[in-house]
Figure 1: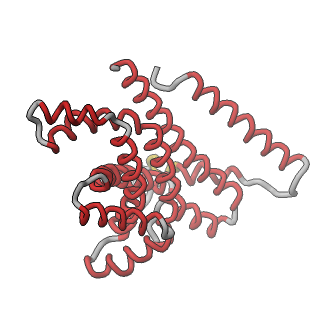
Figure 2 (figure 1 turned 45 degrees about the horizontal axis):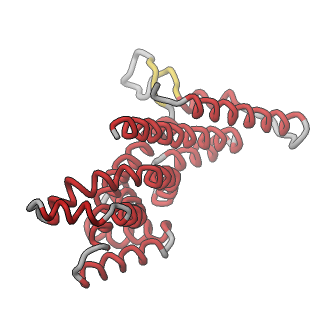
Length: 265
């Protein structure tokens, strides 16, 4: 079973709690007229997009368009964060003082400055010089920010592997790089899957900050929809639910991978 029973029960309990809170606010709390009828057309709508279309068909609404773009940004950023984090993590353990100093400086600089500031710097400063699009700049900022954290996770994972593993591989004639690639890293990645999953869930949520550079992700589309319809509560609740779907699926997929790796062990 891909999704565990515990995860399904957790989601069910969460849905009940959200429903109860909604009922409480509606029945006894704030006096607000809900307009949930506007939400479906923000997700999907049946009609024509241009005057050239003569036959109505089902199209993605603005929230689903933003949802898909958020998925793309998160997926690309995760891939590059893993690559960058692995390089940084290995460099942190290097015997070369310069390599180690550069990696430490990178980690401390990125982790101790706000992501929002980094997005602005990469988009307006670096992006203007390299002619980066908003998508490239936003994805790069997320990958660099999360790569610093992934680097520390990878470093801790490598250090958790007994030194005898590397020594045994070197005694068999393997180079340092080959031993790291075939012996140490596969074992380390098995151990760091849980913290990596938590970091990538944070990445998905942090991706909402790219809306500040007018990248039409889920948060940006939600803000634009609120400005048009004035249905702030309904739209922001829907946006939160869509983010919850993304993070929940990622969490369940991670649990599945953990179970598969446990079986292989």
